[in-house]
Length: 59
Image (cartoon, rainbow, N blue to C red; front, side, top):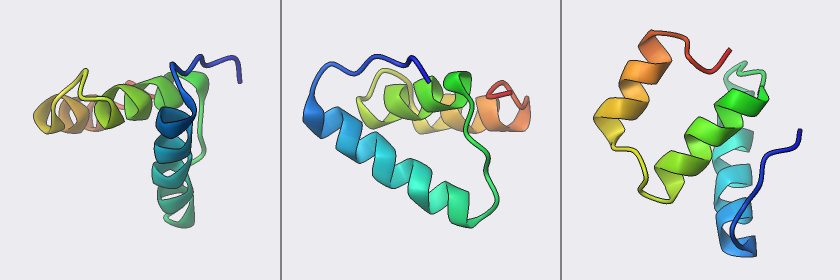
């Protein structure tokens, strides 16, 4: 989907998080992948992640 990752560990961590969310019906978008990547790497906090989720910023 064109999302860049700084290293393999970040890619794997993000892929694991995406897989878990997809079991719950989440359909990934490039923006959604970026948000999860940024959370996994500590670029955004849990409260910011929840705000993005509530606002459906991942669409």
